[in-house]
Image 1: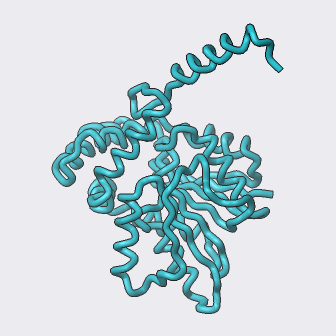
Image 2 (image 1 turned 180 degrees about the vertical axis):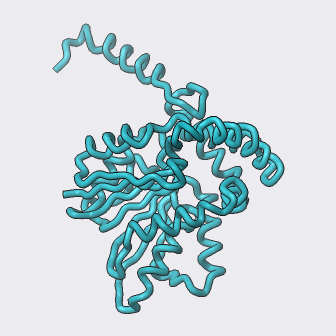
Length: 270
């Protein structure tokens, strides 16, 4: 037990330390507790136009990336899947179509997102698509850093174009490890570091074109400026792979897509 004379001092030190903790929001340094609020606002603002903007920004290539990502993830008919940051359903619907090829399969997908606006868009899309078996989908709003699930629940964890927006990426990976079953698979699709030869051209497009598209198509310049900056602040392929290994995953690997514009990372819980 702490000596009474030291307790007030240590409590004051802890409060000062917690107040001084900062992280990046794009290129801006902000208090850690503020980043989650700002990210929430960004995606609440872009939810209705999210898929349209993805098409415009990538000239439709994001659909090919997602198709390939799901092929690599290989969800099985009996898989218990959690798709984190998957509010609009883009990844979940692709996986569900694969899983439904065996009508006897009892697998299901939990679509998990911190932003209810994004989940609302996904649920509306699911209800409007007769090919989607609604009974195999559940929608949960929460924080990827503190998943509301028991240990060893899922066979497959997917997270696409989301993890870079989280305040503590290491906590997200640790939670993924916790909720996966032994031999469960962790898969990430995320923007990454492009080959250096093309970097100047990519930067020109990213910083000069994408925010303007955001303004024209979604009346939101700043949200898309943040999305561009957030990509530059995310660890490169090698560093992110090391973070996955540090969380305890084995068989860690990554594959670059479109010369490193994005990458698929995988690991297995042993």
